[in-house]
Image 1: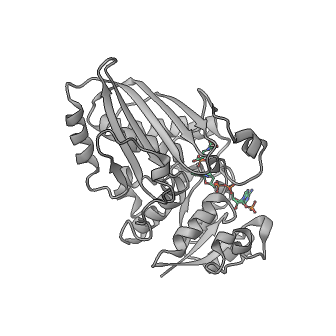
Image 2: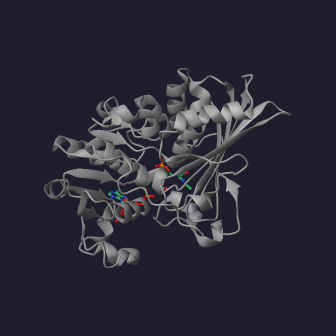
Length: 345
Ligand SMILES: NC(=O)C1=CN([C@@H]2O[C@H](COP(=O)(O)OP(=O)(O)OC[C@H]3O[C@@H](n4cnc5c(N)ncnc54)[C@H](OP(=O)(O)O)[C@@H]3O)[C@@H](O)[C@H]2O)C=CC1
Ligand SMILES: CC(=O)N[C@@H](CCC(=O)OP(=O)(O)O)C(=O)O
């Protein structure tokens, strides 16, 4: 059994980590933190945990967390995570950080899209935690930077096309939608019921901070620099991301050939499900699960390939992927604690 801490347990990804780790046979949740709820039971904040999780929230005190736990999930806002992650590493702990603080390899890129970095020396060491692309590097890592939710869906949707060189990369366009839990639990006017319910709009147009993260991963798989158009939208639902990706197809292949290429790429990947022809990914069919559902086609009128991917932003887009990374780092079976089917309806 490993003793884990969830730092930032009172947020949406924190409570999702608690739900998943409670069901994990090799894990004991030894510490949960929340600055605003010190001394309160986590289950008092989240009645969904009632009777299962008895941990009381501690403050974000590095010595205390390190005394209680051997493995640490930081589920804190970006800019905040990097204030504590170096101290956890210094204390000899291994960390999966769910924030964006260690995802971008170039400090100048981080500082262009976020703010000044206070531990840039760790960027070269941090491993980007998308197992379907970086599995071998994750296993020995001390610090894993868990990917963003949109970047997870887009990288899995496009990886086979870019590895095989089947598209004109200058034509890549991604149109993505996220449920509101993607914005976190902290109160914000933009997340209020009346602001979101019955509405549907783009945001971060031509400037969302996930753009360089997506470009970094796609650049790695393509072996060339990538620039793409990425437009996220806010959906009036709790969970789910649907990313629809477009590019000019440059290969003389049929849809059946292309499906065979995707099948080959993902046949060993338990969490990536290529759906049958004509069955399109739906956020309702991945809810609560660590699956990424994919499908694709070719549009003969425009010569474009269209690939759609659906994930649960809190599971494959955050806490589930973080547990998948922990499994790899500890040599556990990769799907341990994560093999449950989605909730439907
Ligand atoms: N929501 C999502 O779908 C996804 C989120 N992420 C990332 O995961 C991280 C957590 O996200 P999410 O759970 O949604 O966020 P929430 O806002 O829901 O939770 C944030 C947590 O951090 C704590 N916290 C906030 N500010 C500070 C601070 N200054 N110092 C210490 N603790 C703080 C909060 O508790 P308290 O204020 O009581 O301390 C809370 O426990 C973020 O970096 C986010 O970008 C990644 C992928 C998907
Ligand atoms: C709906 C919504 O607001 N989503 C968040 C993305 C959440 C996420 O996955 O990413 P990070 O870990 O990089 O925050 C956003 O657009 O900023």
